[in-house]
Length: 337
Ligand SMILES: Nc1ncnc2c1ncn2[C@@H]1O[C@H](COP(=O)(O)OP(=O)(O)O)[C@@H](O)[C@H]1O
Ligand SMILES: [Mg+2]
Image 1 (tube, rainbow, N blue to C red):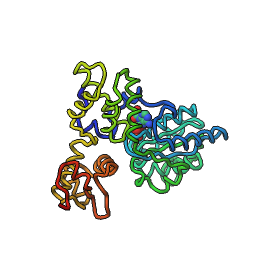
Image 2: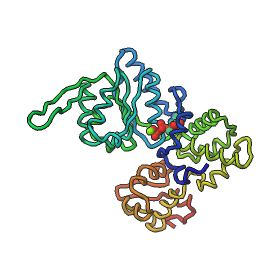
Image 3: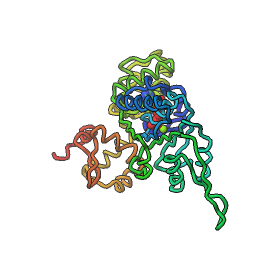
Image 4: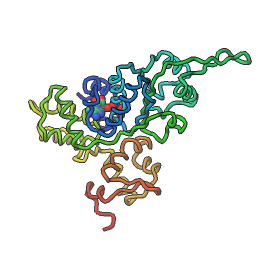
């Protein structure tokens, strides 16, 4: 039961257990994919238009926080198009040869998915440009003065890139995507529906109020919702409950030290440090990282987006500021009093 640390449960990042869970819970069609309605409408048009022209899809870039459905949507597109998808990631592609091997193994209209595409190295990016634009790669064969450039033609594939940090995708790479889609945080009601769907697939019985309770603590993120659902199930099972009811859900969340706004210890520590050590801010991200003992990337990518979304934190040009709402939430006296 406990191969997850408390902190990992709330984190939006992917862990090995998620991969197993993904196989069963990942929606397989667009109609199974809950929420992101506008994005889905756009995708339907995007897919249908390519289908009618009998062409490959334009290259597409998905951006949004961890666990919102970027990988899932890429699989769905492949499924709806009836084509193969090959999966890799920015950090995994170290040498030009690695990318060349993958590109030359693609088939016409098939999809190459590159996760964390903002982490590609320069040399690889240079190879991708002509691959995306002209469906060709230039390989250097031989060494020294006798080296020759060999141009290899590629099938008309589609590149789908995913990133949690769109600002770090280099402009020339970003410009080569025909379509750019943003995934937003979900509504609590949508997360609730995702929990009910997952519970059904996993053969669990859950009350509507329990699903609501878990949804409220899920950071508006499907991956976190699925993870919490499993922890709550473990708890209910140990307590001998046949159905997950609201009480079991609440107790399980309390045990995980997740409060009713979905904040964990680290979120609370960030706000507490901001308020008690810096009088609510503004304070620079580097100072905040040192004072909380968290690294800057986790602060920026995991904790802050959620705290901002909830209205507990503001990012200003002078630094991070705790809002009045966070003073209330943590029972601190108001800054102005
Ligand atoms: N809209 C959705 N409806 C139902 N489940 C979803 C949805 N989006 C994501 N999920 C679930 O959340 C998990 C994480 O999604 P994933 O596509 O891996 O996120 P990302 O690639 O953006 O980090 C998936 O395995 C899937 O089970
Ligand atoms: Mg992913």
